[in-house]
Length: 270
Length: 123
Image 1 (tube, chains in turn yellow, red):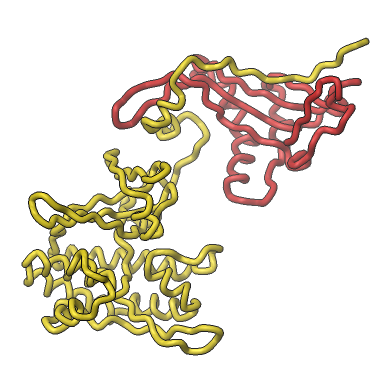
Image 2 (tube, helix red, strand yellow):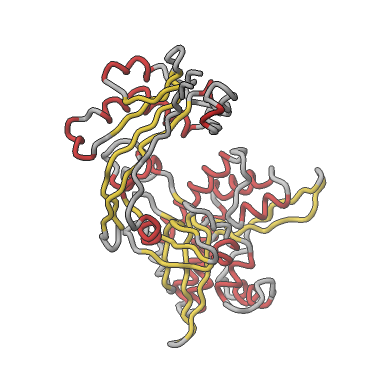
């Protein structure tokens, strides 16, 4: 089956958010503290363009920096250092540079949206999407090689229901959880089918913070294991998923059904 | 005034008619998937001897005058289930509904479908 991974690139704000939950993500000092201890990388600068002219730069980081920040926050500085070193390796690699090169071709607004998990619509960024898939896989391999634990609870899945003020997120094992609509919207993952990772940050025994992180779904043909999702067809009788409904669907469908009627126009002779 | 079209159940003799059914409007992947299913698999779906418990129905809408295939619809009885709780519900499931490309976006003209029917159909 395919795997939902976290979006492989981030901005500095995401690293600060992971290291110091609840503080303003634009704050400089938490990131400086991480850099001073080599628990975060310098990132890779991507020139930004507006109306064809250079307009500053966007610094892009590997999502391993977020792992590093979380590990350090939990006191596991050794693992945090390993995560940062892995991030440095990834950011020096050809794949990360390829992603940055492809980002350069976008407008400043598109660049920021892409790093935040939202690719421009219209299929114009097929190469970037493919590079991000590969990068997400590479990062997952580095995580495994560095034996990095997940210090916070995570729930990865896809949005399976959208309600007025919340969404239901379903994992591949069938478990489900709900999240506020505004939260997944901020991660650009508020549509049915979107991949999202919820991270629960335990503050103490009585308090926790939840964060929605954009997910990326590795397509079936790229997975080592054959993916049932790739072969999904709504037609025929072999696909069990066409007969699966949600509890709210059941509520809507429950009751005595109306007989199915087909209205046929008839001629009335005078 | 004769009605513009008629509805009848499909028979195994309709294979050729279904094979030539064209419902791809914009060329989107899902439109081609629907057309492919109708052209190649729908008749077998309707007459599958192992599926008769679900009472599958395949209905064709044809023009009265020329017998042109206007639309296709199919449904059957199924048991839906909540994947988590396992709760089950008997339902009628629409397998497919499609309108031929030549009829997509068309409205019946007054007098043909019948003003006396006081209906207006838009495909």
